[in-house]
Image (cartoon, rainbow, N blue to C red; front, side, top):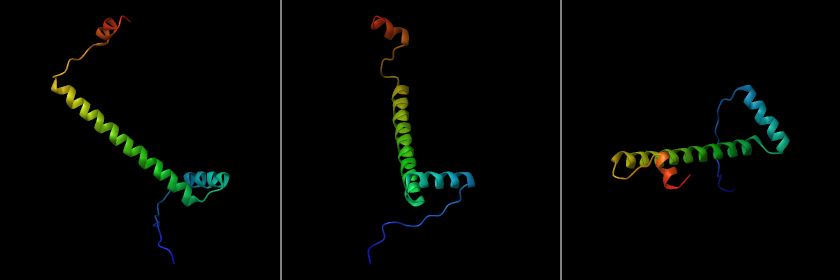
Length: 83
């Protein structure tokens, strides 16, 4: 017998969400398990990207607050670029 590479998970869903998942699975010809795994994978990736974006923005803000780099107003940029 092979090693199981999945674990069971249980959660509660509103009836409308359950029905939407079932309807989409029927149209796509896939199982609820496959569909929900894909949905969770995508949501986790989105959360990780959001966290990375936040960390990048926080680091940029901290660097800006040091005040050791020149900043430019929009008018200064337009003037410098002849816009």
